[in-house]
Length: 172
Image (tube, rainbow, N blue to C red):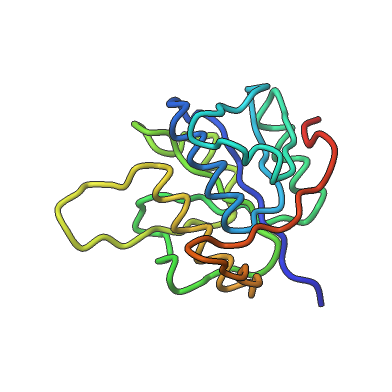
């Protein structure tokens, strides 16, 4: 059996630094594809060198991105603070999964929530009301990679050895 595929949906993330950090985390945690909605370009500042490490598909409309994922049998999981959300450390995943994060202020919109099959949350134990979107995304992607059994990269010195980069552009 092959490993479950993972996707990150980027829609309505306002700050380019958060977008860049999410791209970098996607590359670090083995995300197979970033599904970008409404934007043609990803920021480069926080993701230096990472844009070519993860396949990227662009859509103008959220509905088109959802159709694309549904055609592939991908479950869409919203990352949100919600009483119905399962704590991510319980690994409630079932197979190929796309993660949808809310924006920095309002979280997931009603349209986002409607397309989600389920929700996960990151339990907090201190004083903050929420986590930064890129931190939350990184935590969830890490948990999925552990659950899915993604192979840890070897370590060389104080860095991980990256996979060989694939050639060719990854945007459509």
